[in-house]
Image 1: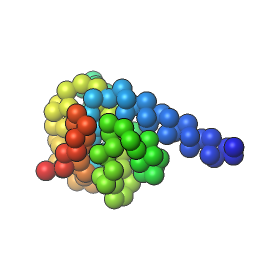
Image 2 (image 1 turned 120 degrees about the vertical axis):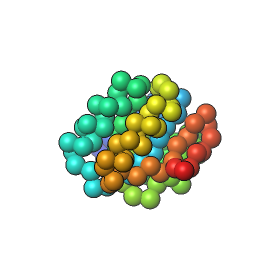
Image 3 (image 1 turned 30 degrees about the vertical axis):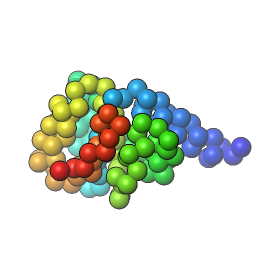
Image 4 (image 1 turned 180 degrees about the vertical axis):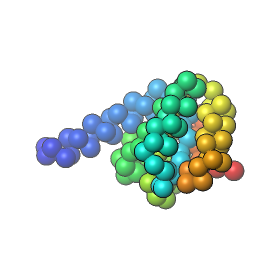
Length: 121
């Protein structure tokens, strides 16, 4: 197996583990945010029981296939980041909404809560 293929398989396994450990996920588009702004967002979400990570869309789709988070398919459309929630999903959603008000580059794409897709509205 090539090195690149091994690395991709490791990322898919990591995403599957995060899906399994999370009760919900929230998908956002982060295009246009600075590294500092993303760091501030991660810092704000961590105490709420959420981890905010950027992954390649195709690897996320492979990881989500046939699992509880399969509903995430179709929530991409650009570079996306996922908030893996292990706490109260509404608190994380509010924090993301508030951050998006101040940083218009962040766009909420949707979420998967209890295995069901929820649109951004």
